[in-house]
Length: 175
Image (cartoon, rainbow, N blue to C red; front, side, top):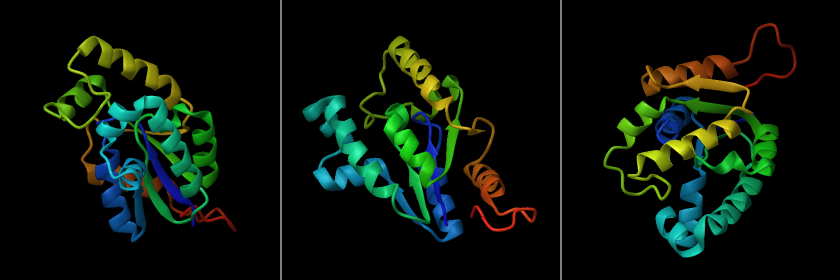
């Protein structure tokens, strides 16, 4: 079975939706940031502080190479994972790549008080700039689901509807 891979900006609901999706479909969940934290025995914030974003992205690339060769996973990627075109390509080949989206206002509300995201900034202008820059990378993902006015379960239901096998498809079930 193909992997189901969730990408998108921080605060769009990737982790929450991925957990529900994995449970509902009885699949293993892999969160790229969690894999990196376990490998390095450090938080993402500490990895960024010690190695910088470039160092973190190298670790992330290694994780994507490994998980993209596996099957039947639910994969939740960090917000910047698909900035690397190689990651985008590998993940697309691995399964159903789905971008969760949300308005900047929704994301700011969801992240309010959050202290463990290294690229989340109290400086609204720099955070808004990052959001805008990332939208260009996310635009390459064919399947987009807006999470603004949905519960996590509604997003899960939409994903299942998108990836479920169609009666009209003969040999290649998607799920």
